[in-house]
Image (cartoon, rainbow, N blue to C red; front, side, top):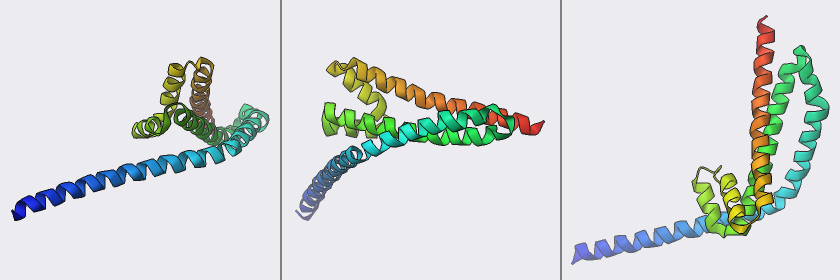
Length: 161
């Protein structure tokens, strides 16, 4: 009889623990999307500023061999601003279209799963232009990072000579 009570108690504790984990995840999703909603307008401004700095300052610096390494580092850093903006936008899209369950699935896909999941959510809801924008911006982020790495390799080759 004592063993049966221990088993029932262990099972009940497991159920309560599982429910607590679900509540914590739900609160994190709710809080995360609330925070993302507040931060997104600031990220848009940072995105535009980073793009302006890249085009006006860093790309011209990339022309000259002596400043190419600095330009590569700057462009690489701005790619993180672009990436964070796309990620937060994807988080908000996924939450708006598929709710907290979609966000949890995206987070469980390693965090970066939010971006492709937002594209899928947009496609299922018929928002093809928004899905295309997310894909285009994600490609832009990776293109900028690849370009920065190319510039860094070019700067290293120059310094070896």
